[in-house]
Image (cartoon, rainbow, N blue to C red; front, side, top):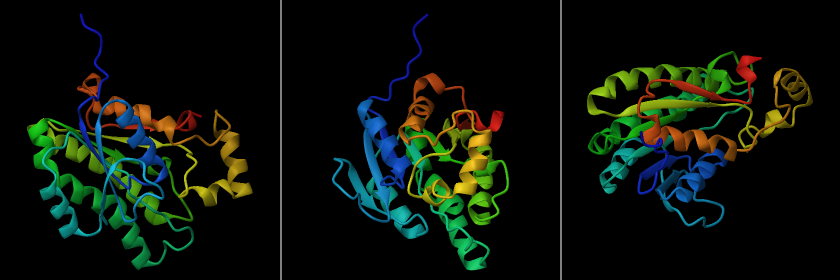
Length: 237
């Protein structure tokens, strides 16, 4: 019996929201594993990281389709693009915008690149959240969208199985990124968090990357339709 194959060498990977903390950590991990990485985001990276970059707003259906036409091959699609606005998401227009980026944007990318992933028998990796599992009083749109990601992941896993495309999601725990900065700087929130969090610390984006690489590798060929918490034990406590 041969050893499990965890390699992503030669894989072609596209990461939306790739210039953010989690997206960039994933990009470096895949590159280190020998993959070819394309990043998309609304703004270019703050510094040249040596990746192929395409400016893209995932809310723009025509732009997503245009990008798909320019890319010949894709093995792994990861949707990391996202944002949240504390205390503002009760406004219907803000709520709709947040859901558009996280959930509808995910669907736009999935459908635009489905032919590519069918051709390569590739995989889609979505990004859920701890807020997929419980309420978020200051960011209802973000929590709703991330809850939707869990359902979308299951649904696409079943729908895309006929094309031999696997669809899974990662639910990050408490990660040090710019999007989570307000939470990091909120003493009351932190006090409650640390009471429950077994690791007693905010984690680095790089600590999520191994799970993404694993899900993209042949070793994960039977994993489909699941959301994996990578949270330092938060949901277990």
